[in-house]
Image 1: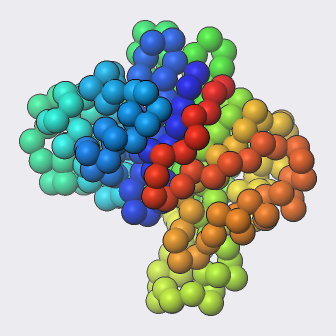
Image 2 (image 1 turned 45 degrees about the vertical axis):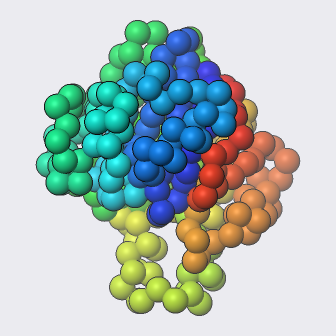
Image 3 (image 1 turned 135 degrees about the vertical axis):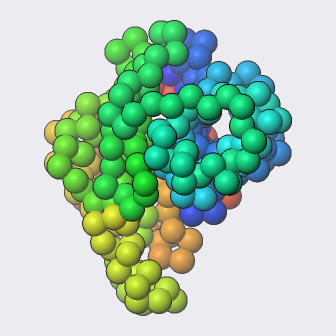
Length: 252
């Protein structure tokens, strides 16, 4: 299984996964032009993508999904509640295919399992991509470390894992009190410490963890890495899915 992040953060999200000839994109929060160029950096063509799966209705994950379909002919997979909220942003999209949160979707030899999250969206899901007994987690916009999340992280060989904010940076930063409370709340995002503790106690060592959805104002890649290393030591290979460009090519 081959994967890379095209971009990760509140300014836009999209992740590419390829396994056994199946090519998938998860979320479409960046422009079609950006997506095409960033995929080409790793020798992939966006027109070859078999499906676009949307995790939830927030703009940084769905705003260019309609463009992806109209420009590149990619079918969109989305839950009905998410589509109901996001349809204005999507515009005219003739090929929309619905699934229910908690269901699995088959693409030939690849199965994508969806898992409901606690994030404050209409019907948010996280994904696990499985092929030939290899499992990749896409775990962002989680809300809080909800029941079953540690077991879900334990079940995968590698993962994109939300590590959104540093608590001190959030507290001292420019956001208004209500937004700070939302981020820290049960429907918001995981902090660096929460993500690291989740990885520590999930019960396994992963091939790698890509720290994802880092806040621009309330986090820093080095701060996030140092926090995870202070908790995990040398037990995990860590990288960061960046806010402004394509990540390294990762394998599972």
